[in-house]
Length: 217
Ligand SMILES: C[S@@+](CC[C@H](N)C(=O)[O-])C[C@H]1O[C@@H](n2cnc3c(N)ncnc32)[C@H](O)[C@@H]1O
Figure 1: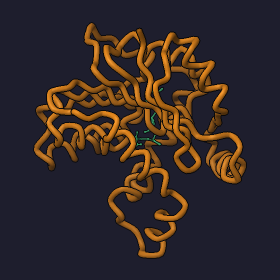
Figure 2: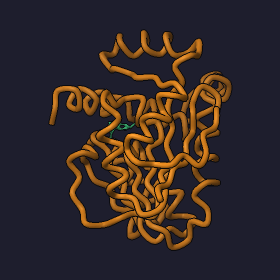
Figure 3: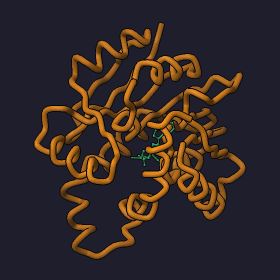
Figure 4: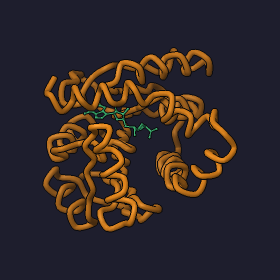
């Protein structure tokens, strides 16, 4: 495990409760209200991903940087055949396993602690997602190329936009916690996807993000 991945994994281990509370709303009413305003795009990217994954029934999914498993569990609840969730944070993986059990989808879901680049499988997934992942990836090209290798259908990805008021604020806030965060331009995303041999079928501005659907010929 590289130093960068180790730092990220320790950071996300410590962030589990705070991050998950964005979805579960286990926080004060004021904080929930602030999330609705300032983190609106987190909920919008969820809708974007689900809409662009339909029909979900019977499909296989790879959820890279699955966090607390919100996407994976929703895919399974909507009838996915099989879902693999990968995350470098041990705490995130345990939380995902717990939620999957609580939602009675633990048979359909398999959560593993792994960096995508170290993940070994012969499987090819119908859909691979990387949501809220590229924010924390220093070198995105090998990651997108690995996704290409593991995907039979399409990828659905989110990238934080560079030119927003939030980018420098977020960079400074996370720097205090020793977590690096990376931002992207539309042209940069186009170049990245092309280099990994993907064809972008949709690229949409979703709040302070770009959400992307890409396939290959
Ligand atoms: C912002 S969270 C997003 C979680 C989830 N996708 C969501 O949107 O709810 C980012 C997650 O990516 C994970 N992560 C970062 N780099 C990774 C890598 N190289 N391989 C797998 N997971 C990674 C982190 O541990 C963290 O849990």
